[in-house]
Image 1: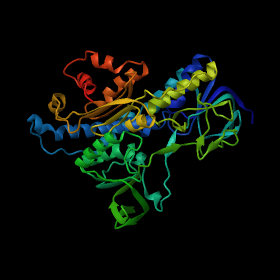
Image 2 (image 1 turned 90 degrees about the vertical axis):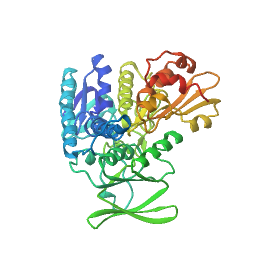
Image 3 (image 1 turned 135 degrees about the horizontal axis):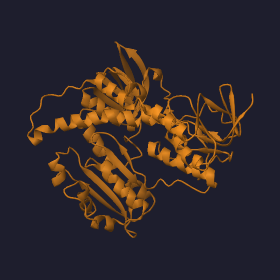
Image 4 (image 1 turned 45 degrees about the horizontal axis):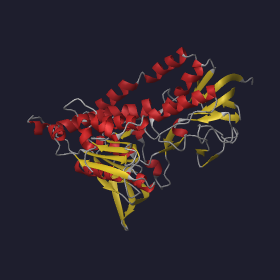
Length: 453
C-alpha cells in the first residue's frame, strides 16, 4: 500500500480537531481529518447543543411554575416529550453537513473511518495508510465504564437525547454534570428522578457551598439525592430495572424505568494503538508536556477531551485545538491557560463557576476575602421570583484580583463571563465594583456582590 502524505493528520473531527485546521491551513499545510462518526463530535451531535434544547424546555416549565407570583393564571403544562426530541433532532440535523462544507472550503480532506497508529508518523484507516509530519489526537471522550454487575443495562446521554418516550422514573449512577442537567429536565417533565453519588458531594470539582445550594433546589423540584453511596449491582425486575446499593451502612434497592451512567467521561483513545505510535500513556491518559505535545513522540499533539488534565468542555476543546495548530506552525511555544475559563452546569437555574473554589484558594495558603451573598431578598431576584439566587466571589486581598466566582441562579451563566474577563486581563475587584452597569439588570448587582464580606 502506497502511503498518502500529509503535513497534518488529525484523528477526530470534533471541536478540537476542527480547531486545529484554522492555523495549519492558514499556513498552507496539507491536512486530513479522520472521523469515524459525525463531523462535530459529541458536543453538537449528542452533547451540549442538543441538550440545551431540552434545557430550554426546562426553563419554560420553570417560568410557568412561577407564573402565579406575577399574577398570571395558567393551567397545568403538558410537555409532549416525543415532539421535543423531534425538535432537538431537527435543530442539529444539518450540523455535520455544514461542517463538511466548511472543511471542504478550507481544503481539508475528511476521511471516514477508524484511525490507528501504524508507526510514529503513520496512521492506518481501513486499507489506507497516511504518513504525516504531525499527528493530532483529538478523538474526544466516551462514557466512563462502571465495574458494576449489570452495568450493560444502563443507558448514556446518547439514548436520553434520542428516546421519544419519557420514562416515568430514572436513576442516575453518578452525580456529575450529566446527572444534574438531565435530572432537572426529567424532573420538570414529570419523571421521578434519583441521583446516587459515590463521593460525599455532587459535582465534586465545584465549590461546595454552590453545590449545596443547587442540591437544595434540585430536591425542591423532587429530585432525590443520595451521596456516599456504593452501587453493588443492577438487574432486571418486575419489568423495571433494580439497583442495589449501600448508603450509611445499610443496604437499599430502588427500581426505575431507566438507569443512566452519570459517572462522567474518559478519553476515547483505547483503539488508537498508541504503542505503535510510540505515544506514552497509562490508564488511557496520554503523557503530554505544557504545549500539549506527547512527551515520548514529538510529532504527536493532543487536544480536546483526550487531554488528561483539562475540563472536558466544548470551548476548551476548540481553544486547545487552536493552540495545537499554532504550535505545529510556529513550533511548541504556546501553552493553554485555563485559570480564567468559565463553565456552567445547565440545571434550572444553572450553577456557573470560574477560577478557584474557596477550598482550593485556602489550600494554596492565599490571603483572601470571600464575598458570599444570598440574593433571594434582593430586588432583582424578587422581581423575577427567583427560587435560588446566590453568589460567592473570592478576591486576593493584597492584589485586589478575582481568584474565583461562583453563582447559582441570578443569570450567573452570563455574569460569570464578566469575572472570567476580569481574571484574564487583571481587572481588579475595585474596578469591577466601580463600573457602571445598565440598570435594572442582574449585572448591576455585581457591585453589591463585591460590597459585602
